[in-house]
Length: 325
Ligand code: C5P
Image (cartoon, rainbow, N blue to C red; front, side, top):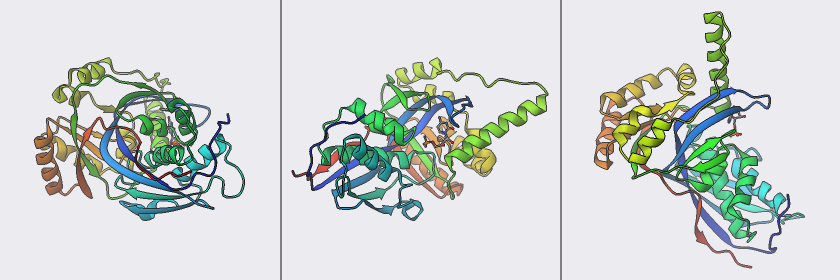
């Protein structure tokens, strides 16, 4: 699909974008295309990256902040892919037509299960959309986002949303109140494909052990969790948090068990690996309880760093625009 874009836009646009945790992550069987069908409940939290795009002859990337040196600077960078996908879709062709300098200021750790790379892609999309004045609708941007990565469409909308398919088919979820979290970052990252592959291996091993074939059931949304979120009661939500990738993440990083245990011992209402990990997310009753929990988990020495966040947070949005035509 090709969309019309206004040419000759120069200037700079900055977008801010949140991290996510998964309140439910149910993983179906491996599909023929290498992905797994999911039912997930995405929840954006107040840990934000910022991406500034500036019109340039050639595309380049500069990354600073949390985990910056681990971020690829070439075509493997998801923000670069997002800008290129938008340029293609809007017909920006020819020398310099789709070039942007992309500056990423990271607070979301890399390979952490918080969709930081996907967040940067979403921010780049929103920022380039403004810079180039493409006038694309949210639905059109979401379609391009889904080509870049399964979690990118959610980073565009933020809030709390049910994700189906690869996670790219979204429906907003009704949630009352706000939720206070402590995120505990791991010492080393986990690559998402490795965690999904470990999940498949664990399932295959279980089948071999039981000596009979168990079809992986189709994932289903937890109605109990949805009702708890509507009630706005974190004490009801905490015990209902689930993540099918957690055993896989724990098999790859067994020390994460200690972090989860420490959170529970210090009063977390829910303790879960976030997405493909290794970040652990702990739900607290309120902001004060989250602060106490953050202090206790830091003191337990079970992780590299701890942050206190709240959700639902808004999706990718322009915070500064100097677009000129
Ligand atoms: O879509 P994205 O590029 O972010 O996915 C990264 C990897 O995570 C995929 O290549 C695949 O190995 C795994 N994945 C999956 N099923 C999904 C989403 C991601 O197996 N629904």
